[in-house]
Every structure is written in structure tokens, then in C-alpha cells.
Image 1: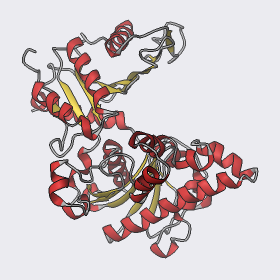
Image 2: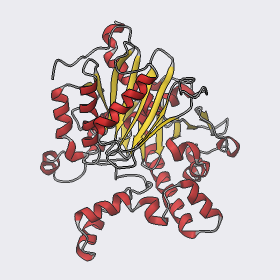
Image 3: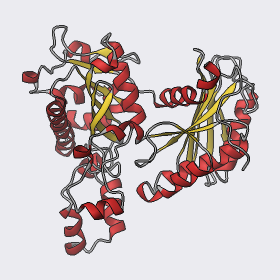
Image 4: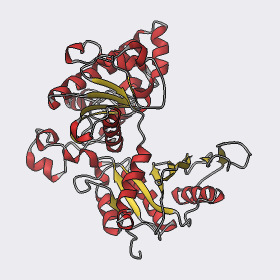
Length: 420
């Protein structure tokens, strides 16, 4: 591999963000000079006969004469190399190809950066090798991230490639919060500690919450609740993360769509000894057949609410387990922070499920936490306060934008020399 570019081409202001999964690639092209999103899309079912690419071009460039229509490709896309080549072709059709002089860099979401990667990093061969060394900590995610990086480097060798790590925002967690109380030598030998995930979302949302309050992030203490199919909480003091709910893996913490969240570790031993389940079977149980799905058979909060309205007791119990765990974490992180300026909900459930927000904070009025029913019932894509006007602690809904955060971090790194 030739020398790795470390700065953006002169005058280039666009960043392509890639999120490579095991059988999918999500992407967005953003203009960091203030033009917003230029294009986005998703390649799914890579390697299957029924692969699909859905591409949203800039307004007016969809080939239909309409504003911002979607273009789709159907048919087999054999691997990630073919997927990214197809993405490059779609972008090129819009005049936004990888050879565009306006493209500054490609930013990659990488799930696990361990303790080594605490900030966005230009990818060279040594960085790639270290990400691969971290595969045992994220066996479902880092391999796919690596595939996307290798393919993108081959397609765009003239461009800086930057890794932005899900774990990076949480590397500031103090040692007493990051350590598990197991034998130190064993923990150190196998890199067992709390790493946390969803870091780009927590970084973005905590900063946007401060902006919503009209204050500098360094002055604000925020509890962020990222509630999607995966869910995590963080305690952010003055813009710095000091605690988070996910741990060595994304399994720990809140109840999620298919993951159990916090569970007595002895459950694993019990299932192995009494039920005769293998490690892989227990792994599948806790990661894919637990959480809301395990409790009531659904992981869609809209469907769960519909079932509750029809009197379904399994759905009601699942909802109450979910919101009870949320309330526990809010209280715990309030204690960690000592002073809380805001509690902020984000991601699919956090942004859209008013009932979840209300139930999670019900009974916490003594801590200054409550929601205004009218404000809480309003839906929208803009950051907003849902607490009463005279509330001691603000409660907010801030739509997350992980792709924008990755693009910002990428451009800040590779565009710095040019800007200077």
C-alpha cells in the first residue's frame, strides 16, 4: 500500500460516511461547507440473491424530474467490494463520484477501538492491523468494518480514510467506573473492562443539548438516553463522559429490542448446567431472543403500545420492565453527576415514543424531573424541550445524527492542515 493521505485535497469540503455491517453498507455524502446532505443510501442483503441498493440523490438529480426521489437496484451484490463499487457508480451518476475534487475524505464507523483509539484516526496499515487485533472484543462488528475500510481504500487510494470509533467518547470514563470487580490480572490479560458504545450519538446529543439550553457544553451535565433497538445511557459532565451503561460488549445495561441488558452472570452458568445450553446458544439467547422480544415477542415499541391498548398483559409487562430499567439508570446517573441540567432522549424510541419518556421519569419529580404532557406529545425532527417551563431540570428530545458527527470528526481531522 502506498503512502496514506492524511489531509484533504485543497478546497475539498465533502465527506463520504460509510457504515459497513456484516451484510449491509449504509452511506451518506455530506458537504461540510454548510450544504448538508448531498446523497445517502443503503445496500442490504449483500451476498444474497435478492440484494438491494436504495440511493437517495440530491434534490432534482433522481432522473425522474422530481425532487429527491429514490433510485433502487435489485439483484445479487456478491460482496462488499461489489457493494461499494455500486455505491460509487450511483454517486458518480449524480456528479459526486469518488474522483470528485470536492471529496475531502471517507469517514468509517468502527464499533470497537479498545483503549488505543480515543479519537478519530487516519487509517494506515498499522491502524488497520490494530483494529483487526480488536476483533475478539467485537466479533460481530469489527470484521465488517474492516471489510468496508479495505474496500474503500482500494477504491479511493488518493483519499484520507478516517476511523471514528463508537467507543472513543467513553474512554474518558474514570477507572473506578470502567473496572469490573474481577481478578485484575485476568481482566488486564483479556482486556476486560467497560468500553461503552453509541459514542458518536452520545457525543452529538450531549453537545446539541447544551446548545438547546443556550449554554457551553463545558458547563452542562447531561444524562443521555439513546433508545433504539440497541439502547444505552450515558452520564456526561461538562462535555466529558463519566459513565455509560454498555460494557465490554453492547449487551450490558438497558433492556433493548432483542438484548437482555443487565443480567446476573450466574444465569449463564445455570443455563449451561441445568438446561444443557452451549455458550453459543446462551449468546444467541441473550443477544437475539431476549429484551422486549424475549418478554413479549415484539421489539417494535409501536406494536407493543398497540397491544397494551388492547389489554395484552405480556406487552404491558415488557413495557414496564423496559421503563423500570430506564428509571433505575436515570436515578443512578443523577447520583454519579451530583447535579443534572438535562435528561435527553434520542434515537428511534427515544425520539418518537412519548409514553416511554413519560413512564421513565414518572415519580422522579423530587429530583426536579417531569414532562409536560402537551410538549411531550408533540412530534418533530428538531431538538425541543418537553419539560414544564419552570422545571428545575430540563427534559429534552434531540434527534441524533451519527453520520453528521462522523463527518464532522473526520473533516476536523483531515481538513485541519488545509484550514490552518
